[in-house]
Length: 236
Image (tube, rainbow, N blue to C red; front, side, top):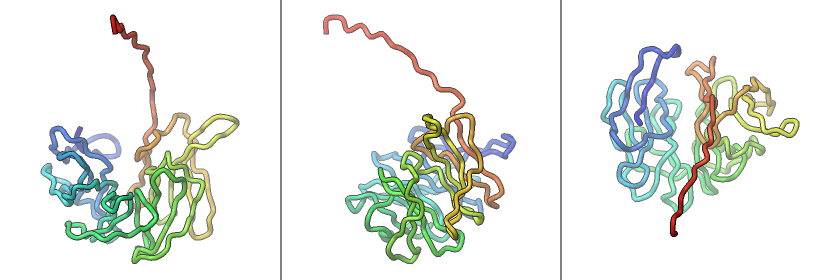
């Protein structure tokens, strides 16, 4: 498993890592598109790495005995927000994008965060708790902005200049159906953008936006198969 990119029509496949074993997770582009940050676990716990767009050998950014994951660049590309359990609980931390000393940003739990376009606020979700929250990027008390956002869709949201786009699964006519919606934090309005015919994966990063915020790309489950396995227990 490696990190790749392609043009929007699927051409010009480019490989960005050569890990040859450890699985890269939660990749995120720098604002200028020159680098990727991601997490992987080559030494038993997840650490953060960054790699140039045209390179395959990543640079390690964290090396603590704790887990660091779910990194995202600040809008100016100078800082990284990431989740870590180094305090004994999953919290949001911030550090220079080139690595270095990290500072704890949240106090009451956080698992994934993104800075808004103004750079004033950081939006985040908490581990195993529904809701989307925000707090000042410089520090301060958090406030809820979308309390009914299901944690099963924890990574499927992205901030653009037009608002926050996200996918979620809600019960409609007795069935759990996916939808893609836009939330405007200025007035609290919700708009359904699309209802896909296929399911959107749970518990994964399934939605993101183009840099100009004009297009979304989502992951859909094309096919899901289950098989029945007969196990002969013999004399056990």
